[in-house]
Length: 497
Image (cartoon, rainbow, N blue to C red; front, side):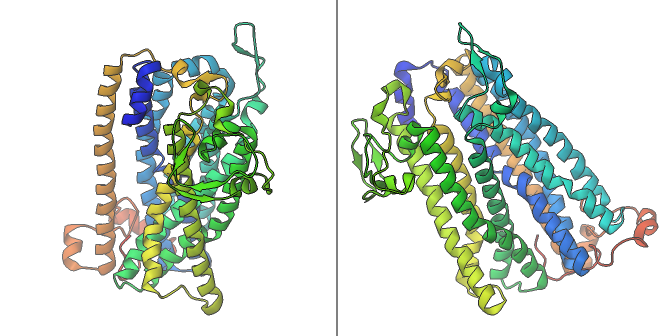
């Protein structure tokens, strides 16, 4: 931050740094919730389907509990998402005022998807023991589709910022003759979207499985923990190698469509062929690189499958049209961290696949479960790194090659923005602290319900009727005849989540 501040102090508005920091903090916080909003509905419905098809009360219990977590997470996402919506207009009025008519439809799509997802989550929660089992399941099926629709809108807007098209400019440089279809389906949309979806499935799968991996390490080797681990981990393990290929495709799209951004991510200074690949390393303002692991010719091979592939360097454009050496290093480290995590997770997925192929069982090694327990946290780090790569690598442009970040920033005084950042940070600490407290409280109630403690029942009623609290006895009696046996009232020993 200090390096960036010193670079910005000389040639940028004073309010640019606090505006960037405020946007970065809120985005980095919100993106931690996104995998669960996008992918947890799918994983929950997968477990729900398994419970109905196999008449498995444990699977139904897990699905219902995950749906409760999904609802709490969605409520927190409303708060953080609303803050981001206001910040686009408040912090970057230059971009929204000039370009909003071109790419704003993506935000509109996301808003409608958000609204539909809220309605469907409410219906899904209401449906437990109030609807016929399969009717309830099918009413939940649109949930993952609305989540993908929301991701569609956001990625459409972001991909347009990376590869803007679908408009013409008048004599004053203002966009006219907007082609909505071209503005949505930009050259970077496909690679970005599918890479994003894969990342969300991986992250949600590994995080959820990690909870039950911790339980397994603590000796809870029951059906509840085995099933809670196996289903989400299998989803994540299947997606992991596919995601690696999607990431490679996205990086190659950046090479063709955003060559200067690619040069920043790979810290390439001079244009040429037979360009080496640096794992980590630091780029200096004079173009030299210190540290890191140098692999000869690999960057050209990865970019174009041949060492003769020409890679454009940062020095091919003016200094004010490219990321600084510090920004390029940040993007490069973020990208390499993301790739390293992805590569290690492929090994973990292969370990799991090998055990299942040889023994039709999950690995029994404690080291496997230790790795699985931290895989979710590693995925969250990778998601943050992916966002940093995308946004920092595009600098100094907020709309690639059309508008600089400094041209879009608000005219609000820097002191006010710093104060706003402090307030937002305090609010977010309280919000995420409340989120954690609620989740822990739910876990405690579920553990009490599973253990069937008489004392515990007196202190905290079990969640045997609904995922958000017990219903009255007359209402429960009225619908008990139509409930699925074991859809939550059956107890399973040792549950923790």
